[in-house]
Amino acid sequence: MATFRDILNYFRPEWKLSVFSITASSIYEVIDLVVPYAIGQILNVLSNQPLDKPLESAIATVSNIINYPVNKSFSLGLLLGLVFLVTVVRAPTQPWLTGWFHWDIAFRSRRDQNQAAIAKILTLPLEFYDENNPGRIAGRVARGVSNHTWAYPEIAGQFIPKLIRVLGIFAFILVIEWRIAILYLISFVIILSLSLKNLQQLIRYETRLDKYMEDTESRTSELITNIKTVKAFATEARELKRQKQRLDRELMVLDYRIHVGYVKLGTWQKTVIQFCVFIILGLTLAATVDGRISLGHFIMTLTLSSMAYAELEPISILAEGFARRYSSMLRFHEFLQEPTGSDSVGLLEESNQAESAYKFSGKIEFSHLTFGYDANRQVLEDINLLIEPYQTVALVGRSGSGKSTLVKLLLRYFAPQSGQILIDGQDIRTLDVGKYRRRLAIVHQEVDVFNGTVLENLTYGRPDASLEEVQEACEIARVDEVVQHLPQGYYTVVGERGVRLSGGQRQRLGIARALLVKPDVLVFDEATSSLDYESERSIQLAMRSIQGTCTTIVIAHRLSTVREADKIVVLDRGRIVEVGSHDELLRHKGIYRRLHSLQETGELLS
Ligand SMILES: Nc1ncnc2c1ncn2[C@@H]1O[C@H](COP(=O)(O)OP(=O)(O)OP(=O)(O)O)[C@@H](O)[C@H]1O
Image 1 (cartoon, rainbow, N blue to C red):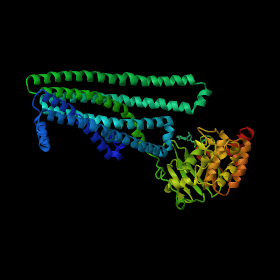
Image 2: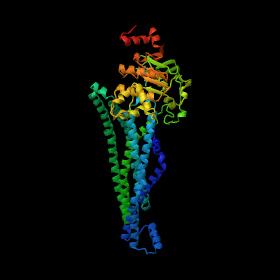
Image 3: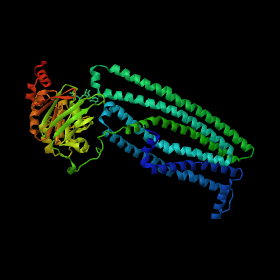
Image 4: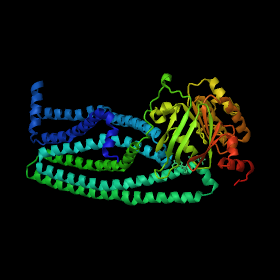
């Protein structure tokens, strides 16, 4: 659970600057009070009433120093000078000593926290992405960071200094007439504590609203991602209706709970404030008529108290603003507190030292491996398999039999519940995960293309690869044919803002990208599924040219792809049921033979 302390910690790295700028802002707010005081004293001079004792002795000291007699003009001149000092001289310094730092701190923290959010995104376990879609995550991060950025100058630059100013006003009034000061203090405590209580209730509504908004954003993001399916099934009207219901639900909370709440709060705040101002006017007038305070003090007290009550409105608007932002800020910290994947340690450190890189022969052993995404449902059970260096091993089996899961465990995306995976005799859990993964390469069924040039996409895993190496990999994966037809060849921009690649072209690009890192273990997860038969055959031939350079694991539904594998492993319901070469497995009347005959002839053998 995130707390208010997490919000404070967000700005912690800048705490020294923060203390300095908040103090400076508070001093400016209090110095401002000198103006009504000086005007009150000017009024006393003009109406021939005595000055306050401390001010009188200060004027006498100045007169002694400069050897000038104290008279009406001299006192007025000094008071005017004081007003000049705290208004005209103050003006050019204030923005630099306050506003500049408040925003500077907010912007620096924004950069740091965005960086923390990106680091979190990069190291969260894959399960997190199964449960939260990009729209939900992006919305939470964006709202959290922007609310922190706006809240800081409001709280540090206005809310706290204004509270200090109110305290300063209380001190001034206390010196003049303690009874008025006590009334003033009581009214403030009542107004602020009742406001705080109301705000707590409103924050609860804000939290509910925040969750509703995330749900809406998440669905909108899904609609964008799955727009083809929506169009194909012509479900636009249904989707619109469902989102409208969500938006109506948001409106109910926003308008009839939150907005009404703030309006009610403002209503009684304003009424209580006006009532207090009126009482203070009556009391101050009575004190002046009784002769307990001078005319100058009468004006000053009234000016100061209306200044103080005038501050209550911005203070409560700022508190409201903070309450509105609060739940988004907490939800951002909850996101940052999500546990990172157990494998993520060290993944954020770039290791460029070639000498510390791992090198494997590619011997892999799965030993008594058992795994389930849920503890009570096993997806893989007691898997035992030995893959010799440079072998090509195919994993086949019905959909859902656990082929991709086995590869995910090999890549350490998940950890097995029992058993182990050894590479060159070492348990992969004992290896540095970053260095280990850099020796493996995988081509997924859906190849991700980043917005950038073809070359950048090809060299994603090895940015230092030479153009010759790129060309060699492209020839093997038959990307060269694709590149030839692109307007700027390797320098054509593809992806989000560039040329669209077909499914087959993307897969070829993915294969070349994997080959370029010269891995010790190369995994194809149905990597040829988007290719036509001719392309698939030519890639198979090309693959032969890399045989013997690394261990290759191929997951395939199309059995024609894996006919030439050294070893074919058949999985069924999470268990290995057959192992052998294509010919051996055909002789054995098992699942492989059935699948093969189904694909060759379309008939299912019993
Ligand atoms: N992230 C996940 N969370 C929970 N269950 C999952 C997850 N991924 C896969 N599964 C389940 O694990 C089982 C094995 O899935 P896996 O993807 O390994 O099968 P597969 O043999 O590769 O299937 P296919 O050939 O259809 O890709 C399936 O029952 C699937 O529903």
